[in-house]
View 1 (cartoon, one colour):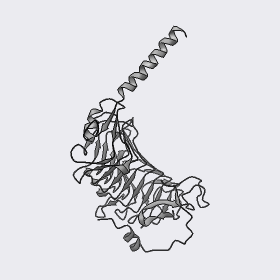
View 2 (cartoon, rainbow, N blue to C red):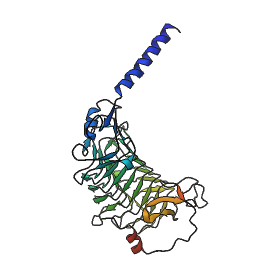
View 3 (tube, one colour):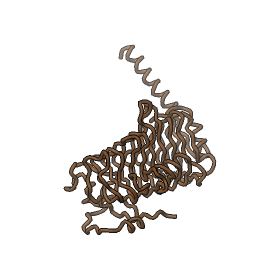
View 4 (cartoon, rainbow, N blue to C red):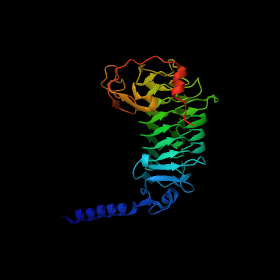
Length: 352
């Protein structure tokens, strides 16, 4: 091997060793007593805060602040085993110091949060990835579960593979609110493969978006399932105000006030059984067909294997899967009975 090749190899090895050395893993509670202490100890870009199974509450486990450092905050065993309980006192996370998409929040259940914007998670002036999380039973003025906005133009934020349910907004966006990604200065987030159900935007509010509300934010909603949400009757379960969000390969069904979509560009979607469904502005080629959920009464939103959501089903005209979930039960061989909107509302009565 020639001298120049040896020098190059030595440089590469040095860089790899240096990168490995700098990427630390901080364990909670083994190394640090709470999540914020773990985040504070992650001082280098790319550090990981690894949280053991358990329920985390009290000081240091809410209002978690990344302080501008791009780290990975992740559970060790997934959302079902790792719960951040805010106790109705504040939100779990606030990301607002310019963090980009190398900042990741992964694998938590966030519950009982409360905030002015973003009852569970609040993101502004940043663009983290939020993935594989469950956001439930949180409340806020806007964005009952998640509020995500004002991401700088050089960044692209993502919410993906999340379940957002049982949240309440007093004004806009019972489940998720995306805000101000409409000018050259800001970039709207992508909401991908999420399940958004049984959220409430107060029917006393004139705004809407029981499931997802976009305000001056051309967010992209793709491959999602949006079911059983409630909002202002004249607005959609997925609603755009001052913008035209892009909705693709998404199911919007059985939402109990307002149409399935409003003010959005919906294409290759299933829009079915929503109170007040009318041809929506910007709606293009969509399917009005029962998505055939396996057990909507227990919120099992997987679909029968003869559902039009399935790419190979004869009723599916596009040959691509629609919604966030695949088949979870055999063919539905019984006729779907007609029902009243009163009985549908009773089905979706929110738990105390």
